[in-house]
Length: 521
Image (cartoon, rainbow, N blue to C red; front, side, top):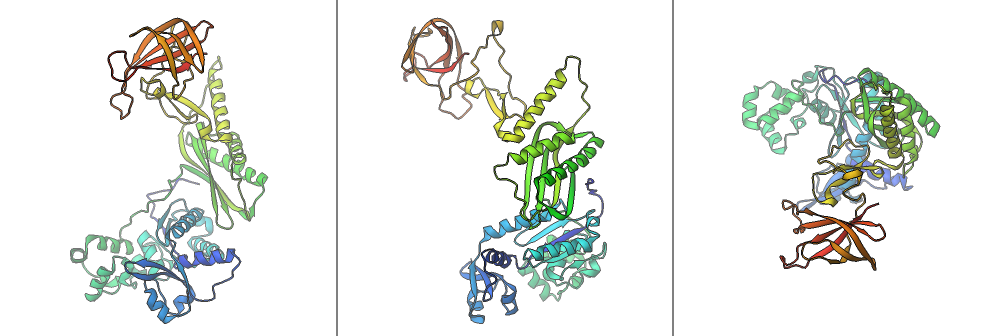
């Protein structure tokens, strides 16, 4: 997929689902084995002090029932109704799923709740034989899924939306918005009931009536936002949509006349897409750090699988192997259903990637092999299961390091402590958290421990180093407000421990406590 030219005149597709609220219920009934509702179906919700209709199926609308009508009036007109309480969350989730499904037509998708989706189809309609072919394909697929639709295509998002909702749908040629939408009612502005009433009282009932008037008087009376919307409907100005998902840096996709479902076919498609993707990456001197494989099922469900890498990748074989491992490691296996009719492989995040010159010592190659191993383990077990430590800017041992995914490029905020003489570590590699309390016999007030009791066993100390005093981090909101004195001690059997005294003898009201923070190997 070529990068989108954002300076090219835009083309927008507005998808309106006028019966989405009831279509969802009908689809649920069909899946439950019930063919259709016996009576007109309406969906109700409380608005203020009244119960009103928020949805009505085609049968109910033929009998004069419309959203916004009070339920009592609807019941008086049509006594026998199928009544369902509105589930706003379910409708919002359905709209999001449909927006995911629309991703097969364009990567630039925006939802307009409660029942509309806008797609920026600039430069993609040729994949479907033109805009008419794209609209026909979308309508046919959604009809097969049980949705009533109305689609408008125009040069601005507002014009496409107005055409779909108030003009019966259709395709407006570039630059012809003013002529094609002139006959729409002023309600197409969607400026609110108060503004619509004011316009009609002024004798302005159609878009063409507003287009013929000077804009400044209109803005002074009805607000600048209304005139801005009018200019968008007339195609004079355009406000780009805000995509719900970031635009990928690179993408390659493959469509299938007959849906595929076998894992061998899926892997073969991913291998082919990886090769196409890597060619684009190589031409731009880039490598991918975050990949996404999107699988579009024939029944409309979309499954997305993300692959993270600790290094920039542009080798097709490596990407294919990692994706295959990622698929095998899924807790919920990839379900093809009736098959996938499209697969897309995208690069969501990339990085500059120069050629690597291996040295004679082989260190560069060894470093690459380690990163490859991390990528394979992360793909198999998940990014959060393979971790590394980064230093933090803190003197407290338990806060001096933080575990992060090994593939992340997070930089440390502190520095690691250097080893002591002869390479002996000054702190143990493994710490107890929380540190267990111990009973200590020690020199008072500042001496090291002579004996301590831990896990019902006494340890006699033969040598000790310290103390290393660590003060509390007063700038943090914490209950830790006392200084610590750390000692490295060794018992008669050669075991080495890291213990600390919490507080000072004779200078504090609270008793002094001792803790074992770690054991040296």
